[in-house]
Length: 143
Picture (cartoon, rainbow, N blue to C red):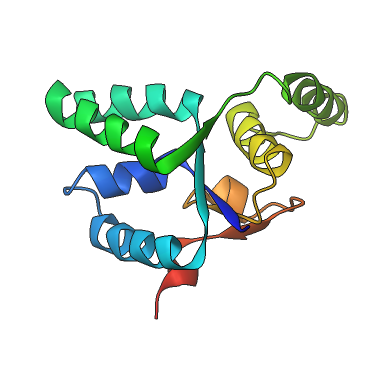
């Protein structure tokens, strides 16, 4: 079974038509649905989406409908099983003076822990880093 973790920026691009990558994200989502058996995101991403979407004027009924559809079509994972390992990695990086985004680390580690074969994002910090998972951008799904 192939699984892909979808980052918050991609989900926001799908939800919010005014975002620059909206059309590209919608087309990529169609391809992802064809190529992967299971779509995955984290429960933490839902709070990010709600905050940004509401700040951009999206009404709560639209956000609720989007969340409802996510819960019907995605596996929603949490951080409870990876938090200790993520904190250990974060500490190691800090003590080596290597900057690391903790939120990105949590998402990637969740994807790996939940057996995802790929991680879809437009986050340059993730795209330009090395992780034990295939990291894809919207351009990787463009024809």
